[in-house]
Length: 235
Ligand SMILES: [Zn+2]
Image (cartoon, rainbow, N blue to C red; front, top):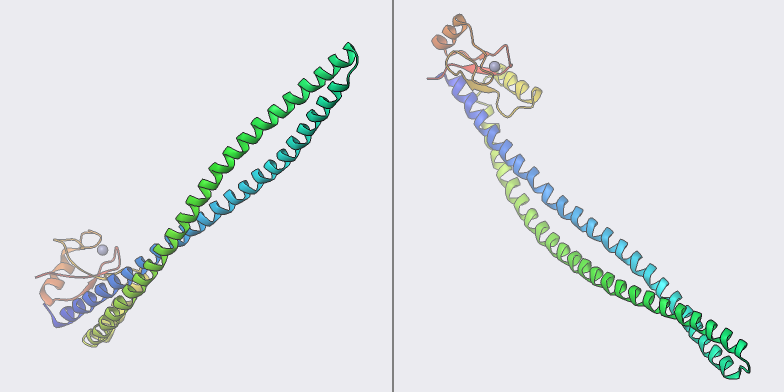
């Protein structure tokens, strides 16, 4: 193996390490983001439940007023009934009374239903507030952990980059420029591939015998015309 190739492969190995560290850094973000999303979802749910509780409380207050009003009406009817003097008045008073009692019974059952709903909603709200507290605690722990990991990875990254800088000085300028161009242009982690049999180790396109011979005999690093990576003859 030629020294240029060895140096180039060493440089690529360092770049692969750097790429791995950068991916680990990027992978830390979604965890924080996911917790932010969960927190927002919980806050939205709390806002919705709070609105629902408010609406039910308003209905409850309104119904209580109506109920008090109608109970008073029944009391007044009762007083009127005591004062009736003939059959016709008595019949009318009884009918009125029955009607008022029916209304009151309906309102009482509505009020019971509202009370039950309110109890349910307040239970839901309590659970949602617990969830929020849980997410908050989780978020704090995750942030601290992620911050620690970030510091660790960045330290490794500094070391890896220094090592890469050193490795780069061993690769001839022209070859290094070509290598860098392939990596950045095609946004690839690796730009140098060993040939696989008679084909490019990356895209599997067969390489003409003439070129294979040259690479085999001189240790030359050649460009794959199909996928644009650098190839070398292994062994
Ligand atoms: Zn190829």
